Amino acid sequence: MALNLDGKKAIVDEVATMASRALACIAAEYNGLSVGAMTKLRSEARKKGVYVRVVRNTLARRALAGTDFACMGDQLVGPLVLAFSQEDPGSVARVMGDFAKTNNKLVIKVVSFGGRLLDPADLKVLASMPTREQALALLMGVLKAPITKFVRTMAEPPAKLVRTIAAIRDQKQATLV
Image 1 (cartoon, rainbow, N blue to C red):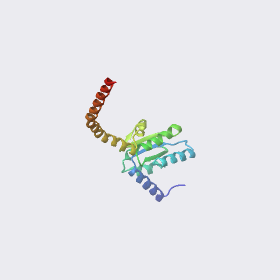
Image 2 (cartoon, helix red, strand yellow):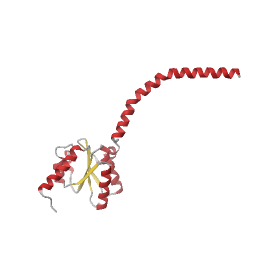
Image 3 (cartoon, rainbow, N blue to C red):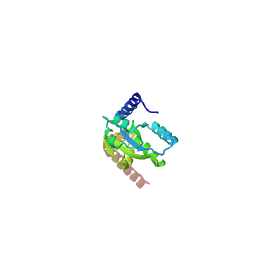
Image 4 (spheres, rainbow, N blue to C red):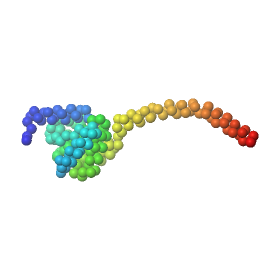
């Protein structure tokens, strides 16, 4: 059934809203995927905070115009599924990449991150980006390292003195026995 103008506007608004809040986007060709496989993809994506939508290319171009993903407009050709990462940039790459490994009918065509197009071969680089929690943990480790080293350095002279006194005590006890 064909969409009327109001239905098309609603789709464009929904996709534009998701695109404006998204961190990364992937467009993949899904030709030949079964309904069950698409349902599985959507289910996995939902669990990981990824928005997946099949949209006509003309509507997708209108929705992506004015967002960081406007650079994808010329690349949207053929039957494509759009996937937007909502929580961390690497989640969309992990979901789509893992699904593409098990389903060879899903072919990654366009990858966009930070307002630029990436080569589909760079999907692994995007997928290896840390999640928010991992990035915060790395940052805290980096911030904590100088303080920890300073404390160890400051504690070393008294510890060395204690070890020296203990060695002298052990030596004197050995000579008495």
